Length: 74
Image (cartoon, rainbow, N blue to C red; front, side):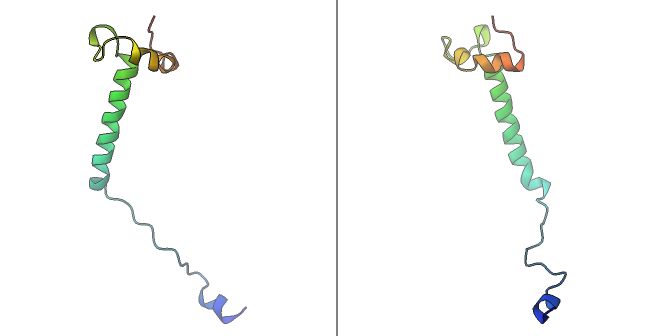
């Protein structure tokens, strides 16, 4: 073995991995949760009396997703 191999044995040039504090992740988790709830509303309840947009555009756009997730629609 040469001197370089002996000198670097057991050492890596990669930086240590530090965990991300929860207080920095929490706003992103809340934002993602709100986006998921909004998507769930549009897929699951955007029709009829709870409709935010007139017509059937949103319903037709998410129609296959409704069936995939088990929401009845007709």
